[in-house]
Image (tube, rainbow, N blue to C red):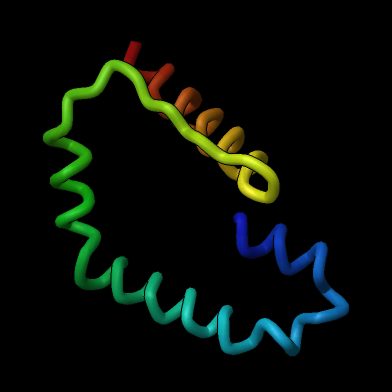
Length: 78
């Protein structure tokens, strides 16, 4: 979602981001196919009561949306 939003606000420069987007896709596929279980096991085994997202400038909105998503996902468990 972050990538889609970023690119939509820079639509006039899409060609200049081709290499970066391709790298994000490559890394995402690698994580999905090879590393997802490691990440899932780590998150599942970590007993947390709170989570803090920090972000300023360009990443402020990303931090806020991440915090909101975590809140949405954990409200079901309460």
